[in-house]
Image 1: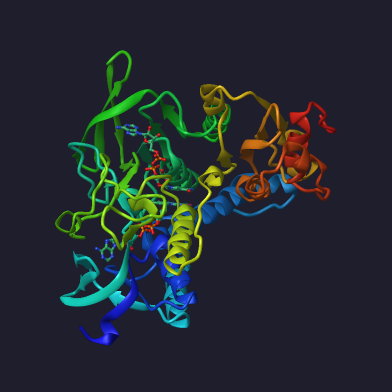
Image 2 (image 1 turned 60 degrees about the horizontal axis):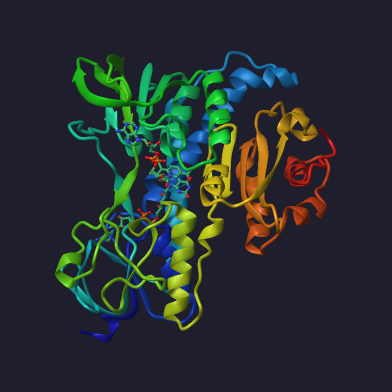
Length: 465
Ligand code: FAD
Ligand code: NAD
């Protein structure tokens, strides 16, 4: 094998886990290659995930504002209409700029992009498009793909996954979304704002499982007010394409009662599963867990020495920033530094309007663990800036340890919740208390004052309610 084909690190997968790992390893002086089979870098997140969905969420929110809320600010518009091709073109250009940005970063950091499917053929050897490269260390960052429902075939036209839902050529009159999680509610919001009647069919008796129950309930109420319909404790048992529509059979979980529903487009958003196809893991002896995730130890090493794994393909929340932090940690460990990820402070954000943002423990989790806690809440109706923005739905909720006051969790439903959450994430990273947040300056008038007030409320002394 030529010296040119010998690397310190070969990362397989160019998504947020893989490309960040490759850049950080190169920054630390290692010779790095990243294998990516798709025609662009950036993985699910940049191509068909975080970035295009946020471009559509932002654009559709502007349309909704122009249609429904700018008038309240005294901004009168003529007839507002949707130019869907332009909206989709905006999304495509944002994706294009972002994926090209990663290519630029690879060149800047001297990371070689090996184009093609990577297959591990032995310890320290990866085959890419018929050519072998050697690697002192291999990092698997092959991500995830959507989960299918048995007997329902996704054609990405009328029965779509999130990928098809990012590219519908026309606004469906009726959209049924299976799954009331991140994708269902974000993509459901996009198409509802564009004019579709949206019904969410959720298997559980609540939406956004894993998030704080009180926040989820209020969130559902807000979405309902926006016109989204919900069928909870219900599953789709069949879907057949007939003419231009899709006919569904639904079954209620408790009673077993069935009903029929018809739609123009069906979005299946019932979760994602790790992607390891074609990697050759079985042959080299890399073990998977019962859910098909690559098993790793605390240092992200798989069952085979010198082979590591990060991101959606291993355990933990399937989020881009989680994959990125793991990419950095592995790169630092491979360079002899102490890499570390704090899983207690991984934020989760649903980018609807209003947004939902969450970090740390929920009330349900604290109760289950038998931890004594105090709760402080502050509604956006009592925040001057939120009122000025006509966006006063929701609240900030902070959970702190009863004995030590350490912040254990925070849950926000409201305007810019995702941005507001980060001061709490940083406070938690430093082991901060509710008192620390409450005594820190929060400029007036900002939405962040609601965070300060919720922290004050942990000790029963909010000032503005
Ligand atoms: P991926 O991004 O999936 O990248 C894996 C890469 O590996 C892919 O490019 C794939 O082509 C490549 N690959 C696979 N096998 C091989 C092989 N054998 N050889 C070469 N290349 C290979 N997360 C957030 O944090 N915020 C969001 O707002 C958000 N929005 C989302 C919206 C949607 C619609 C979806 C679907 C996901 C969203 N996510 C979001 C989740 C996020 O996209 C993932 O958590 C993230 O992309 C995981 O990064 P990764 O690097 O582990 O894997
Ligand atoms: P999800 O896990 O967020 O939600 C899936 C939902 O489908 C759950 O509520 C689940 O109870 C429900 N469900 C499962 N089987 C069902 C069935 N047979 N019938 C009806 N409902 C069923 O998954 P997702 O929305 O597909 O998204 C996948 C992952 O991608 C997310 O978990 C998240 O990690 C990531 N993502 C993140 C963001 C973000 O950060 N804003 C956005 C999109 C996706």
